[in-house]
Amino acid sequence: MATKYKLMAAMAGGFEAVTARELMDMGYQTHNETGRVAFEGTMADVYRTNLWLRSADRILIVLKEFKALTFDDLFESVKAFPWEDWLPMTAHFPVTAKAVKSKLHSEPDIQSIAKKAIVERLSTYYHRRTRLPETGSTYHIDVRITKDEVRLTLDTTGESLFKRGYRAESAGAPLKENFAAALVLLTRWHPEDMPFLDPTCGSGTIPIEAALLARNIAPGIQRHFAFEEFQVFDPQEFAAQKEQAVAGQKNDPLMIFGQDIDQNMVELSRTNAQKAGVLHDIRFKQLAVKDFKTSVPNGVIVANPPYGKRLSDAAGVHELYKQMGDVFRPLTTWSKYFLTSDLAFENLYGAKATKRRKLYNGAMRVDFFQYWGKPDWKQPKALVTSLSDPVKED
Image 1 (tube, rainbow, N blue to C red):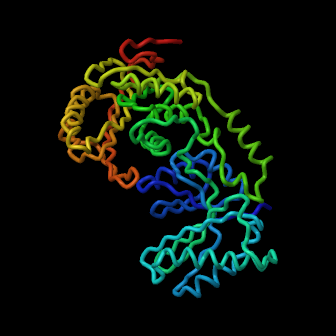
Image 2 (cartoon, rainbow, N blue to C red):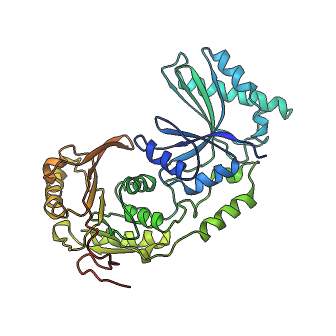
Image 3 (cartoon, rainbow, N blue to C red):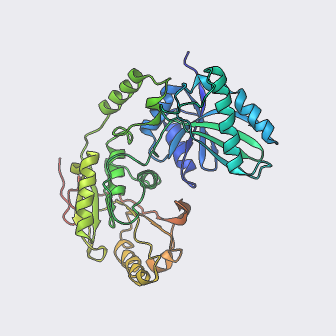
């Protein structure tokens, strides 16, 4: 029997329920904490969740949990863990530390003492009298102390899961891929019979993530992970999982649209969609919000419009929010979702949201304003190739 571990998916605050739902849909039992969802699994599950989770930042293996009231407690408990089961003699093992409401509150001291304990354990095991070389694969160890309870974790992901591998460098601060995917997962979108629109698509992240979801493309299929360098890594198992993921991709026609007022951003969106393998699934177009018109029913809009944080930008952004209200409010069969840090959005848009969800985009508080539509399924369902000129196809 393969060894089972306590695993944790880490994610941005506010998305715990989204990641938990992803894990439950994959068959795992979950337990939520702030910024974490715990579940159990083998190394094969580590590969699977890194490959498939859309809303998470990383997957951690919980190595040990214990109570520590003194630095001696911390040192001895860390040293007692069989690090040699995980770390080869050449392992590079950076240690990070975080303390919240604990007697041991000096994070530099926690980091230093934990590192020293690991070094002492490994030096004894590998019969080293000089420094450990740390020239090999990276094993990132984190020591988190909350109310005197210590949790040692090993990061299996490496670069955050938002690094899908398809996005070119762009100006500004585009929405992270996993954040965009979580927003799509929060909607009531059914790809088979509902058009999807991002009217301020920027570099295309939201429509690209929508296409990856609809096509059942594993978000991690193009990238590498820290666990691929672990001594316990099983390359045959991981290769089999990737082959299975590719075999499960769908090719049904989709109704996904990305629009932006800036032609340069439209071109960047196309470049990113091409790298992601979904360019043929998304119709990108240069168009200002105020010029948008459609008679197509039953769609979903997800937008991350500019926030207008700088005073010089605020007037233009507020005008954009008013235009959004004028253009999108009449679309009563559509559901609309807008992400912004401007808490006056509802007043400018001209309607109170059905629901507001508080999120954090990095350190910035943002709200997801949700306007739920009432789809009219009496109208014939059609494959829409243009929102301005709907076409019915067999």
